[in-house]
Length: 237
Image (cartoon, rainbow, N blue to C red):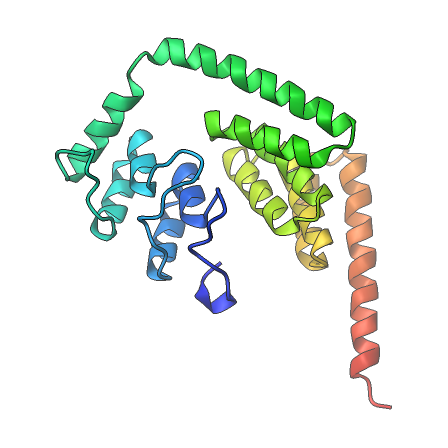
């Protein structure tokens, strides 16, 4: 994910790495990304907030402290300090909280239902857009990330599918579907060893899952064929 691997740590994708790390709550990843040169002042396109604001909204003081030295002052925050940022975000979140939550629940349910219907019609592009809209309202819903991961995979975006699968796993590590999505994304990327590992992790959670077993066998077969093909190229004639 860092510069050494050639990745763009300041990607304009709605789920830029630092936003994901801050949202999920991965302190080590936040530190790594900052060391890799990520810009913490890039706004999350979905919520128009900086990573430090996201961390503060969850009350993660230690994460705010990590981000604070790297973040430029925000005009809307009168008291530019760790305490001031947390207090500012807390006041924003407390306004009409119950009423807002009920409205959000209703909107997310509608969008999720529409997305499900789109998937049934194999309209994966529309479904992914609907799930993205739902995620704008409920950023930490692992089922939405899982569903969108499938849609990204079906529309030829395996890297985005993998990112959503990783978030799904981070949010709910005991849910086998996240590992299945991750394995499927790796398979699409022809990363068969990583796919096998993901499927094996899923199988450990649900040893009787036939779908995972089948996917794991396919990953092993693909890995064997890939290794055999590589061997024939490298062999001496």
